[in-house]
Figure 1: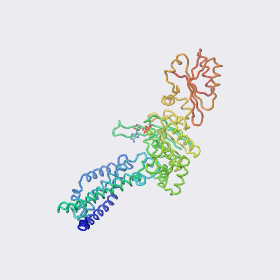
Figure 2: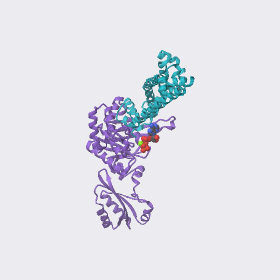
Figure 3: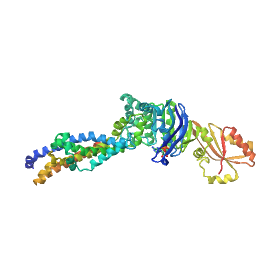
Length: 220
Length: 340
Ligand SMILES: Nc1ncnc2c1ncn2[C@@H]1O[C@H](COP(=O)(O)OP(=O)(O)OP(=O)(O)O)[C@@H](O)[C@H]1O
Ligand SMILES: [Mg+2]
């Protein structure tokens, strides 16, 4: 055991850092992009606060397309765009854009369904009180749905950890990368098992924290 | 305060034959401080009508005038201002489920720009008025339907509106809770001077609180006037149907049949403190008919006692019967023969 740690501790530690860095950076950006996408879908729906068929159909269509691409394909598909936006297609920098393009529409979809859970009557009540639509959206709807939105974000964060495992393919490192390199290519299963255990623990912690916060915010 | 001038509302479907004429050429006026009720069956257009008052729905034709201004002419900003003068409560309460009772009242106030301390003071004031101050930290899911509706009333009142709109606010409640909400409405109308416009399909709601009523039938006003007049002397079939559920006072017709075959059935209605026992006694003395009470009920028409009696008269001669009816009418009691 102590042998294992002296041999592999540093490698695994560094990989964990890379995974956490990739996940958290892309998670934050994906939230900033994804929540407005969810809001846009709900607001422009036929029964939303600003119905707009064109905007709704186009966003719906784009999201469906992005959502149907596996991350590994997306990663290579948008390489040229990544090159322009990030200046590079390798390392952590090179993987942020694909991860965001992967996660943001996902968050958007989840947030959409959470916002749709709000009773339309409640929104109507706030309209009847003379409160502007933008305040209804950001201060009432998002607030009312925050428990479900936290649950959505938990799911998205876990999905992102999974996706970062493939980021090793473009040299971004991370736990998935060493599991693949050492466990599969050099046949050192103990390294692979160690990373798997760390990933499981990571996901468990995230899910539990998410559940606790979500439950605390939901009151119905 | 509120005036509808030839208002119509058509919902447009994809094809012409899918258009729904929800409200058609409706005109009426609601005076300041009045409680005005609109009654009608499901789909009659009541919600559409009430939603035009605060501009949640726009008329296709005609004008809705609130507090001197035509709602359709208001700019977006003015419309928001108008809505702040109009509170609204709903059948399904429409509270935030993730907010406490107090937060449910404070949040909309702060969104309107009130500062926090003032919003908190208002929450306290109005929660006390609806008698729920001790529940301020509960969540709606922990309250009964009647309590939730009272929170909704407090939320509406906290904006200190001139008008309160009520869309079937008691339809989901049991009779006792309904009564508690209705007496709350009467109280805020009297003590705060708020004009109340309500819609309902329940006749007892109209009787209990309204000064005037309009009966809406398929988007058209069938009858309109003071509640007492409309319900004691309904002119239209639909009004009679609403009022007439009890024209035999709930006694099944087959029970009444044997009486009706031998004698004449009449129904009496009176508002206020009419001494009715002596009335029937007098009828007996004066016209040599024998009245006998089959059923009776008393309740409130707004604040006035309102009574109904179902009576059968043993009268040998037609002129005795006619005389008796005429005499009863002269005593300010509305009387009608009941046909079985
Ligand atoms: N947004 C809408 N689009 C199309 N048709 C509508 C719309 N809102 C209402 N209607 C139609 O207008 C008519 C009147 O509806 P409204 O909701 O005003 O009735 P109501 O008297 O309030 O009924 P209830 O007692 O069931 O609430 C109905 O035929 C209804 O289907
Ligand atoms: Mg309705």
